[in-house]
Image (cartoon, rainbow, N blue to C red; front, side, top):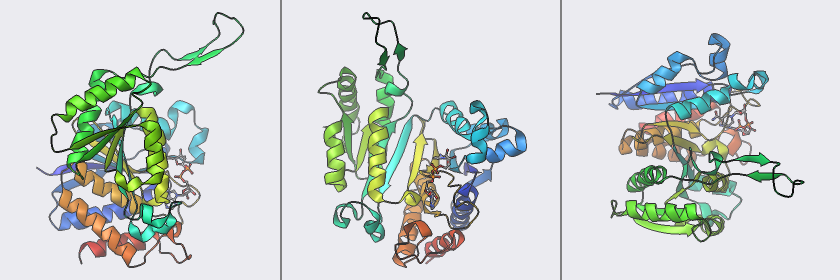
Length: 359
Ligand code: NAD
């Protein structure tokens, strides 16, 4: 049976970049990819026409489908809404309703764009690293938390948070990471702080135990301080990294910046069954919305990730990634990645990827 995608273009450049990703999807469907899709309103656009950023109809479509492709949401006009009605709240609600606990943040650098990185080109050209961040547990959610004024001295406030993981939370992110490693280079590095934190000790023990179920994957462990150092020293040593919410938040942003271009980076959040929501790392870019100059490649690469990780369509994912590499080889650049100022429009970039798919 055909797999079904719910498409949420969203706001700002979201609609522009999604138009290009849909062109690519249509081209693959025309060549036999067994996928159907429908678009739904989400974010500020949904608020404008229904009064809700996440209308019930959209939520239902997201529940019922096999994967979701999101453009971007938000914009200055919606920042004036009451906090609970803002697009960002809709996104958090969607992630929590669908229990998307495994956040995939690839850092890929096409060799053609190696000059965009702040690191030396030879250190980053061809970088293809995947960071899995646990998204719904750890210190961002742990209890107790707060700022207390009832300390024994009576004259000092105390801020505190709790880093906590249950065995089942570690088990499911570990399985997610091993499965991703199996679909890539079969090398997994688990990042923790087991020399200091008991929660990391448990993390390391459970990841190691789960590893026995994936004998083909080479598992290593690294302390987070060393991982941060290694990311900027020799990032190409890694294939897949898995880590907790806090460590992943920091390491994935550092890794993203190794690539130098936010307009090129896809991401995903998966549930326990591998269903996911795929989206570019960037936001709705209100400063360039409506100008037809946004880079659609992060969204097109998000579609490739969707096909690879939720639909097991590695061949189609490879074709998209190769088509993107081909247009970069041809010298096509959107404004954000054009070093010499010569650039093509959003739609010209999308058309070029579609053309490259068929040649
Ligand atoms: P942003 O990522 O939208 O933009 C940051 C800078 O990068 C801007 O200069 C923008 O022009 C540029 N940029 C981003 N994507 C680009 C692309 N594809 N091509 C070319 N240039 C690109 O971040 P921001 O300005 O902090 O946020 C703008 C809005 O997006 C806010 O309302 C924010 O809440 C929202 N946002 C949404 C998401 C999401 O939908 N998941 C993520 C982040 C931010």
